[in-house]
Amino acid sequence: MAEPARARPKPTPETQHYWDGAKQGELRLQRCDDCSHVYFPPRPFCSKCASRNVSVFKASGKGFLYSYVINHRPAAPGFTPPYAIAVVELDEGPRLMSNIIDCPQTPDALELDMKLEVAFQTVDDTLTLPVFRPAKG
Image (cartoon, rainbow, N blue to C red):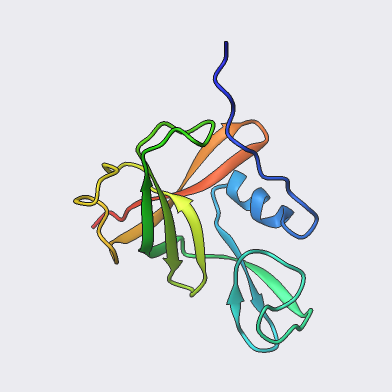
């Protein structure tokens, strides 16, 4: 019997630019053209001032580990415990949930405020996910 697959995000017209960017190896965010607020998750209006005058831009992909929890239970299909569920604060300001790769999934290795950089995991021909790894240098 095949192992259950990981849950898949469902792109919408408002989030398609984010998923297209990931497939191209870019982490894309939105910025309000009126108040300059950078936000995530994607939406058609600014989360600070509600302006619909927003634009999409390529983020640096750099940030730091804001918070995490290590899951040891096999509750989520498609994941092998232990694995970290992380909150990454991007250099541009927004925080997003992701996974940490290329690093032991232990409290000794996952230090709060450690510098991270985006990487991309190709799930299949239609889905690429942004994940994070310890920054080099």
